[in-house]
Image 1 (cartoon, rainbow, N blue to C red):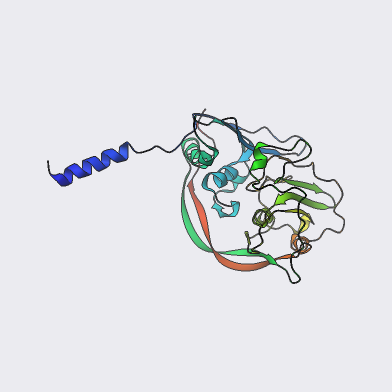
Image 2 (image 1 turned 90 degrees about the horizontal axis):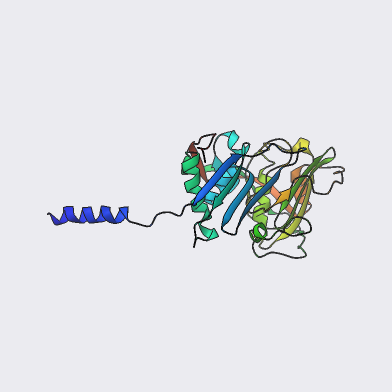
Length: 285
C-alpha cells in the first residue's frame, strides 16, 4: 500500500476515535406553564449532577451554551418569548464547566439549531463614567462569582447577583445586587434599541436600583410584564421587588446618570451569532 494512502487511512481512523464532546445522559424538555398572576420565575440551576432550567427561553439557553451576551444573538423574535422547562442529567465525572458544550449538543439535537458567527459594525451604547466620576454603591457582601448564587440561593430574599424587575403605574424598578458593570450593561440592553457595552474599566460588584418610566423604554425585548433574567442572574421572582411607586420616573438614560454613569451612542465591531435554522418544537423526550 502506498504510504501516502496509508497515512490518510490512519489519520481518518484517528479522527473517528477522537474524544467525543460531552453530552447529557438524558434530558427532558417541556413547554413551561403559563405565568401565574403576571409573575415569571426563571431558574437556572446545576447541582447534584442535575441541570434544572425553569421558564427559560431559547435565547437564554443559546447565550449560556455559546458564552455570549444576549445582544450578540440574531434570530427569530420567538426565541426570546417561548419558554421551556429543561431537566438534564450530567454524566458521571463531568463538571459544570462542560455544561455549555452539553447545551450546544442538546440544542442541535432537540431544536435542530444551526448557526454561524459573524462580525459586524453595529450601533451600540457605550457605558462610560460621567463627568465628576462614578457614584457606585458597594454591596454589603460581595460574591466572587455571581454564578455561585445559582447553587446557593439566600434563604432571605434573592441570591446575590440576582436581578428583580417590577412594573407599576409609577414606573419600572430594576434592582440588582452585587452586580458587575458588565452585567449592568447587558441588563440595560433589554430596555433600549441598541446593545450596551461596558467601557468604564471599573472592576468589582455594586448594588443598583434603576427607576425609570415605561414610556421611555425603546426596543424592549421579551414578552410584556416581568423581564427574564440577564446572563449570570440566578433565581429571582419578578414582582417581589419593592412595591414603592417610582415617583417622577425619568428615562433609563437619566436613571443611569444618578450613578455617575452615562450612555454614549457609538459604533463598534460586534461578534454575532447568526441563527440559520431552529425548530419551534423540540423533538420528543
